[in-house]
Amino acid sequence: MPSTYHVITAEREPEHKVSLWTLLWTFLKIGSTTFGGFMALISVVQNYAVERKKWLKHEDMLDGVSLATILPGPVAVNVVGYVGYELRGWRGAVVSICSVMLPSFLIIVSLTYAYFTYGQSPAVRGVFKGFLPAVAAIILAAAWNMGVKTVKGVREGAIAVAAFILLLTVHGFFITVAIIAGGGLVGWLLFHNAPSAPPKGPAAGQDAGKSGTGLAGGVKTSTNAVAAVSMGAAPFFTLNTALALKLLVTFGSMSLLLFGGGYVFIPMMQRVIVDANGWVTHKEFIDGIALGQIMPGPILISAAFFGYKVAGVLGAAAATVGMFGPPAIVMIVCTHFLDRIKKSETIKAALRGIRSGVIGMIAAAAVVVAMTAQPNWVSLLIFTATLVAILRYKVEVVWIIPIAGVIGLFLY
Image (cartoon, rainbow, N blue to C red; front, side):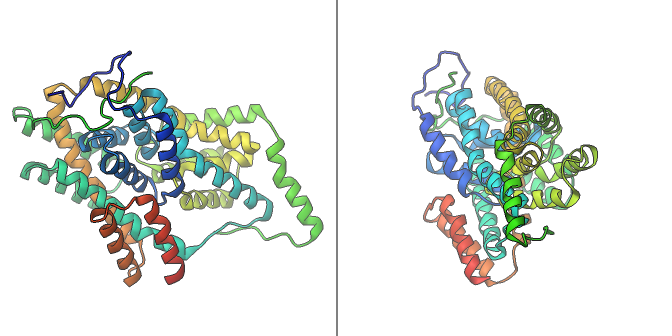
């Protein structure tokens, strides 16, 4: 029987090859429809890659989430890079990351243009109230699906419960690192002499190729409107390469110091973008963060808002590449070495503990999101319907969140 764990080789050809076009289309859909922050995006990716497509095994996905959690950069985008790399090597990682980022980048650049031209920011409160219970249910479903395949006994269950309680009661980034490290240590202590579960054979695609909201007032007169439109459109035709390069270096440097998710990163961004460089005002910074919150995909796509203000579309692209590029490279390199060391019995034992801890963390994230939803029958309806749709009927989650938004628009 083939081993569940594999070693990367330069010339390896996949048994079940996932095409780059498939990855492109899959992550375009995910990036276009997944609202709710990094854990929602991870849960949707898990639903596709593990539950629906059977590209990866549950334990492989948990390994990716664990690795992304302890490395710098946006966790969800790092997980996307991990999945792409596992399926098609570095080319798959690049295609997956670019595809999941493209929809939110295009949307936020368009809305940023409207913001700086007309002084208006879109906000449909009812729609986003509908998103929250659906996102909570999606995350909980992901925790459940991973848990039933990974938590095989009382000891794994105890680790998951401990991680769940710790994440809800102790705040700060370092608790996530402590859970990962503690889970690995406890796993090694408990399981290093335990027999490994018999392999069930690689999932389809397991051997896939390793080749390779305060806002400004509106326009009051037609003359002012023409001037405003001209000023707003100017960045589309301005190529300030020096500023773009500075944005690339600045955001790239910051991204390598990002641990613990986008919310942890906001204070650092404010100090660098507002206080040190004066690229945006405090009000514009808050509005840019707000726009990032309502975008599909990663919250830190707000980088495009700030880059646009400084150097137009080129600046938006430079800031986005700086924010997500360097951590993705680190993630791909570490994924390569993770695959090489996973055959070690010591590492296998540690990973059993880490995976259980990650499941507890995901379940805790579902609780946190659910607590932000409106406490009424509409939220309960959306939450319950989403759980049933995913767990019972295997509905694709990319359709669930938009439908939840429409329900919220009419019922809230």
